[in-house]
Amino acid sequence: MIKPKFDELIHAPTRLSIVSLLAATEWAEFGFIRDSIGLSDSALSKQLTTLDEAGYVEIRKGFVGRRSRTAARLNSVGRAAFEQHVRALQEIVARAGASVLPE
Amino acid sequence: MTENLRPEEAAQALAEIQQRQQQVIRLVTVPAWFFWAIAGLNVELSAAIESRRPLLLGIGIAVFVIGLLATIFRVVYGSVRHAQPRNDLMPPAGVFAILGFVAIVLAVTLPAAFALQASGARYPATLGSLIGGALIVLGGPLLIRYLHRVMRANASGDSR
Image (cartoon, rainbow over all chains, first blue to last red; front, side):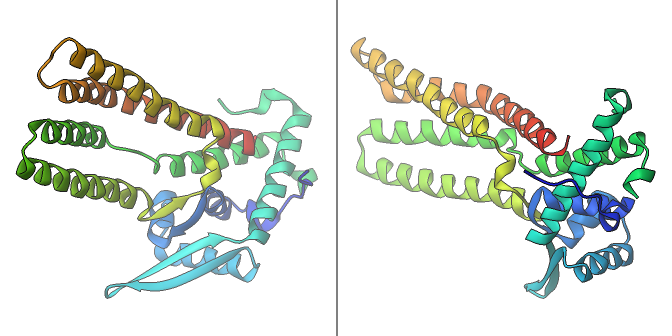
């Protein structure tokens, strides 16, 4: 049973998009996250640093040939926080009824 | 903060979460050419076996093995090159659908080949493989569409 807990750090719009994307993956490349969400390199880097500092993501840096590759994954702490946040959102919506659900 | 969040905003956040999950689900895709390649390789192997010529058989097996490995590698590498979707996005219904699809192809192909053999057809296994190949080419994209649907439903269950 997941306990609902609203997470302000995750709820910020850009971070919510990033964490939602990461929650559906085992790991994702920096470029994939950037292009999927439509962020600049610096904006994504900043948000990932914030999530890293909160202990929610792990950032892996490596090389494929001469090109550097950065990948991120949501760790167990981040995954649990995301699940609790989703549950909190669901509770808010459930209290209001189905009328607020977007089509 | 929870108290300050309006239900509409919470619903929008859930919709955003769902949209991002669907972006990841779209990575799990198998192009139509994959099914043509698999069907073609099966027919090619059957024809090589039924030729009963050692040289053709050797070439046929080599082409089948190399072709199969290259095809699978290309599709798998293409899917997980930039991100790896979580395994639990695929519900048991999806796994059963894949197994069921393979079972249907075999259940049609093998009896067809035996029936053709019994009726004296010259290349029963090759003809049977052609029937199986047609099923793979026609049914493969339908299977992928179904898998995307059950994965979306599974992901929605997580986030709503």
